Figure 1 (cartoon, rainbow, N blue to C red):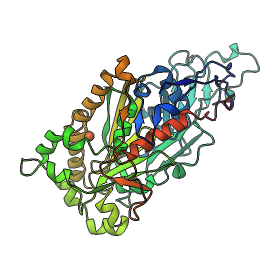
Figure 2 (figure 1 turned 45 degrees about the vertical axis):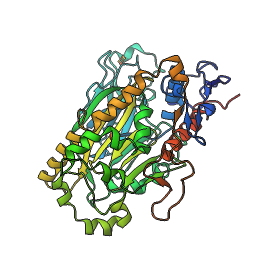
Figure 3 (figure 1 turned 180 degrees about the vertical axis):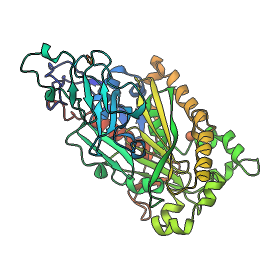
Figure 4 (figure 1 turned 180 degrees about the horizontal axis):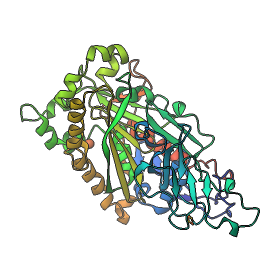
Amino acid sequence: MAAKRLPSTGSVAETPKGALHRPTGIHHNFEVAGMVDSTSGLVDRAIFTDEGLYQQELRRVFAPSWLFLGHVDQLKKTGDFFTTFMGEDPIIVSKGKDGEIRAFLNSCRHRGARVCRADYGTTKNFTCTYHGWTYDLEGKLSNVPNVAGYDENFDTADWGLVEVAQIDNYKGLIFATWNPSAPELPDALGGAKYYMDAFLDKDPEGTVVVGGIMKWELDGNWKLAAEQFATDWYHVNMSHASALMVLSPTGKGPKSEIANTPGRQFHDEQGGHGAGFPTHPKSRFDAQKVHEHYDYGFLRERLGDATVEGPMTTGHGTIFPNFSYLPINGSIRIWHPKGPNKMEVWAWTILDKSMSPEVREAQRLYNLRTFGPSGIFESDDGENWSEVQSISNGFVTNSVALNLQMGIGSEREDGVYPGTTSELYSDAAGRNFYRKWAQLMDTPAWHEEPNE
Ligand code: FES
Ligand SMILES: [Fe+2]
């Protein structure tokens, strides 16, 4: 399953603002169809290690997709901002004087330094610390020191920060894309919206962020984490055995109980998203205080029995490509790519707005203990991804395909849960994740000329 180099397709067709026309051949694109066999469930390990494929991912997977930026609660008033990344591109998200949320490339139009180096804050404008160009909250270039040094053709209106093509939020979660022809956000989320509602729509008042954003680095390709959150309940009994024992009321561990739990898995064929969850009458393994806070009768009425007994339980999900969530913890996270061998994890705790401060604190601490950077579950997961990555660069190791064959043929509509579903223990959403990934990798993005 060797990667195939195609004729170069690097010329810029419809560029982001400020891009120049690049010569054909500057980017090399590889055909990856043979590296991901979603029918037989095989994946070539080079997709986690190859630098060329990684650069192509930035162009063809991250640049055209809707990517998660943050929560609207992080921008309460005019001048509030935070910084993040879309792929490896640094981004400022700010609230303008008109109340609009905008997202810009955090790179000065002069010589390219970041114009904001803070993680978050409140400001009137963004001043580059290199030569002092200043941009307002709407991204316009508002001041240039020694502007008289430029000729009469220089117009500050031409030199504002580069803005994303589309930005929107789904029930408080802000996403953006560089792709002007991407489908609108609700369409891009597709069937995943029903599953996201299990943690975004419990409360008519919506959700808020509690605590800060936890950020940590992991040695591992971003897809290892995104894939697992889309599809992998299989690892829970083995990888998290000790954590499950700690949480067990009897001290003996709920292993057999978990192993025999019925459940479902979902995937969205169009978008590449996936989710999985045990099915049982009540949420479990959340903090007792949070459990007691919920009026399950109200939730059943609001979201339906199937949601309360399925996606609202101890589930997991990924919105393609790199946003994942755990409904029961209120944990949302993004796997920022940092080269083929490294990722940066950013994790938030989001909770229902109407929760009392005591319940919020109980949930925050619960999330910290379980899925914080040193949480009893999180550290198990990170260890697995780093373990897999650490040996992946061996030549022979790298040549041996990985197996995602569980549940082949089980994909179906089940009449209860929307979209394509499979069993709780299944690789169906994983196969779909890589199918979507390969499809994007083999399709020229909006900024490219068509393949020659
Ligand atoms: S690089 Fe920003 S002002 Fe020169
Ligand atoms: Fe896990």
